[in-house]
Image (tube, rainbow over all chains, first blue to last red; front, side):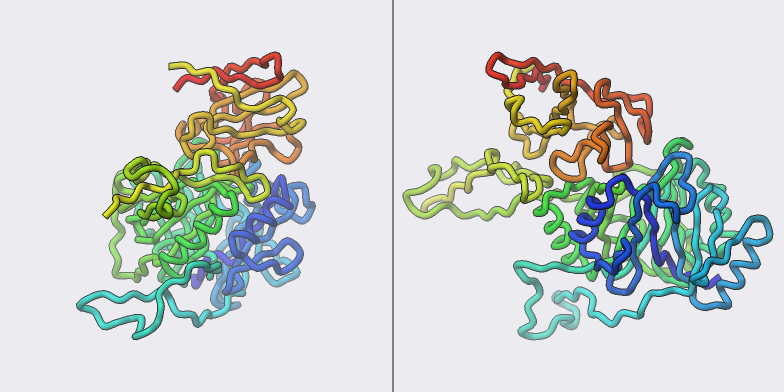
Length: 347
Length: 115
């Protein structure tokens, strides 16, 4: 099955206005009708939770109502139709896509992928011993930047039975397990992509079934940092990160969202082929990330102009700065707890 | 150690809304107050799902759009405003940690917070 990856996530949400503002600030492009897209045309559809056009919600009332996969061609679409028709209803929708429900109850769509092939440079670096990636007189970073999500990367489901989920996506849709957290669930990629994963399952009690997070690929770690910093500066609250995962090697930064699930920016994910042998590891903090950082307000080790500010050495130690989530601009509070400039030793 | 701190005046609390506070200058809100018809109620800003993560997706976004439930934006947990009990989501049956409050004569909300 030449499934490439998720093209579209369809949500039924409590607060459409909040979600619309959120994904706009996240960097997706409004396309009308509640649709928001990354640069390659993959994206999200935001509808009110009682919109009659939405597929039936899970018993858990999760806001994700449908995951639409992009496939390579009509031949693949036909093959999926034949396969899934064996034991379930497959709807043929007016737009040419298919709709069916997986073995866990998630509604899936399948369509010839809408994603466009991007031709954009990735983040490049220079390092001793390696030919320069970024040439002479090319500056690596800008003070202000608004990096845009490039492509819908992956979804992570809370599921009551990861083995059942893994079997369905492996045996019926041709997904491959690339790595797994023991007792938690597998990372899986469909056959049409090299990405380490477009799907990951987390075993939970049945009442939690739903979407844990969704993620878009960025152009590199600096874009993850700058996009995440922009979110913090707009008052959104970090959930986890920034940091770098071990399985998949992707840089990450997660934010809570009005979708009732987390949103992630990621970059620089590992690519794999049929030669890759899946690893496994116990779950937990040690195996989830190579390192974990935390945002703080901009600060520099320099004192105020002479004669102003606190005496030298009175500044708090580094690392005590306020982290993410200082409130949106509209109701941003006075920086009562803002760190005073660190004292600069007189020379 | 339990400290009594003044969070805000009742008049500053939005009607049927919520406000977060950082009473000990930790760099993030650790307590929030919700206005109800029975008076304000306060909780620690910690979702019992993991026990160490805060609830809102942006500052003061503690309630759903109908303002009849407290929500955690991370995984969609919903809590009764008056009791703090999770009625839907990952930590169903568990509760937010209440923060005892009283209203001073001048209208300020005084919270007793264990640090």
